[in-house]
Image (cartoon, rainbow, N blue to C red; front, side):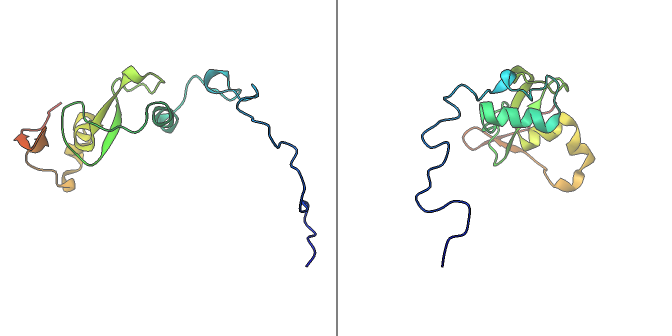
Amino acid sequence: MENIGRFQKGHTPYNKGKSIINSGSFKAGEQHRNWKEKIGYSGVHGWLRRNFGKADHCMNGCLAKAYDWANISGEYRRDINDFESLCRRCHMIKDGRLETMPHVGWKGPHIYGKGTKYTHYNA
């Protein structure tokens, strides 16, 4: 069967051996042409994950399976000092969402440190 496509066997691509990132044409961050100073919720959380990774601990010392980047001021801006890493429960308590969702079923003490139980953080 004959290859009737655009690229034939042995064809050399126009950009072989060239690196876009190292050529100086790739601009990231504020130098990128689509940079916006004001961005929304998902934009800021994407920026956090790209630059600081996933939240991996709770600032209150809780041990949990899920951790979130929680906004402190309520203004979504690209500033790591405006965010804290919290477990899902602390995040919901701080935002006031746990009281509005009683069916979640998080009742009783929460585990801190090495297996010791204490009353959970109250905002």
